[in-house]
Image (cartoon, rainbow, N blue to C red; front, side, top):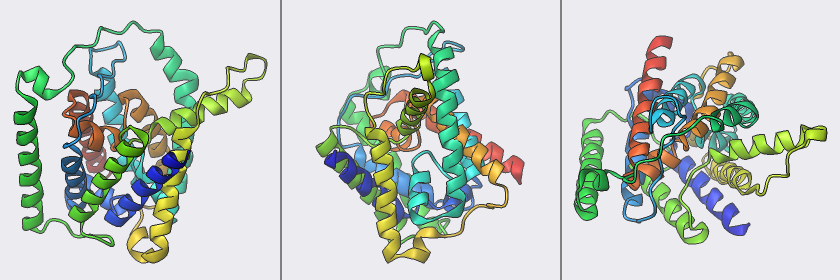
Length: 318
């Protein structure tokens, strides 16, 4: 359990130091007015890409093809980000830092986890899924060597980071520069791989919470007790790491929030984050940092759908 707590706290501290958890940073990225979030997450993905682990599989709902879960789940997450000013992982960092709106978002995400495990997951499991393609990564799909594809990916990451950094379209920062913060997230990734033998990701905690909820209220039809609570522990430790950093830099960590006068909207966004992340098989951490660094096709599709959904809803909200 120590490894889970240590890795969660390291990830939370890195997110807080980079300040990518701040609601304003997330929403302004979706408005394309501030590229702080993009700088940090590309730096994190670039520094994570040097580790070679099994790629993420496709998430199919049995509705529209191999990637329908990635597309629909990504769109839901993007919409949830726009409504709540949070991501499936950063909501815990916001909690630790004391961001008011994040408590509504987390409440909504917990409800989303309950709805997912009690209703959506069983319904989708009954559907026949198409067989998953054998090639799950860009290099294998294109027939390129891993080294060549990795070099191309890193070149694109560095070029975009350089363009953003030199164009002065990043207007916020935390205790460290956004790029340095991204590298800290990459170090947290390495820490997780060494200690837990797994990459960063938080959305499974919502599913785990839902499983425990239905186990507790199941009555005579109570399902068997969930086999693990390690993802919930990881998420709680993430909040702890953010809290510890906020003690040293309170103003820089909390930052401006979203409008908390509409708790229902923020909570709805949180629910969409939880359900969308489980539908897509991962969140902004699992797909956006870990999956893209592995050149997983499913992660590239999911992240593209996240931005499409988030930018679309943000534009509609005005």
